[in-house]
Image: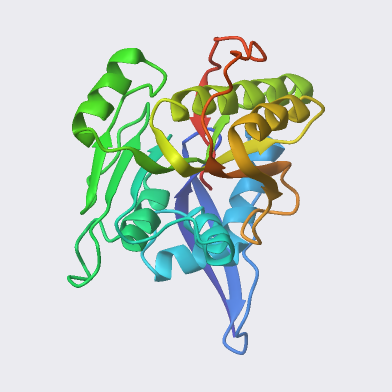
Length: 274
């Protein structure tokens, strides 16, 4: 017997609720969700909906109570590279909706869920509103590149240096691929400029980047300040996406001669935590 289920889902592109038609039979154990063509909506919007509805990481995130699928990117990176440890101080730049902070809070024990292990600190910063999370201090509706925001973060740390700076941010995408790439590089550069003021020696930086010809410029800057720099792409990162992550480990400090590689402009930012 065949059934059709109709329900609504909010689109990541236009933020409107779409009607989704899911068809399956009683004999099916695995089925694919299809989205009926939506009048007046872009193909990108419809493709995103179909992709989300059939993504196993989206389903796992709901089952395991993560705020979004991007949690698995950090989980997979940390499983291999061991950057988060109990007692660590972590700052997540561009934290909304908070899935990376969820992972960090669990890994560094900031929620004190393991009484016999060191207790860490997790701070999340974002331009958007973020729902509260146990063991995490959020700075919602805040731009981490703003000096007043940075001052507030430093005050909340009480003099403690940071073990890990995270960023899963991306600039708002456009039809100009090269421009998007350049804005992504500049966004990573702003995270780097922020990181050099808060990281302890031996600390780590994990930052998302959209691939392109300008990424070598960013890597050269990272190479001057960290012992090891590698490009990582966890399995949870879609193969169709141009995103990669720079994992820079063991912060050595800023070189004596100040780098003028990057300008101090900051692009408009959105969170691509899908």
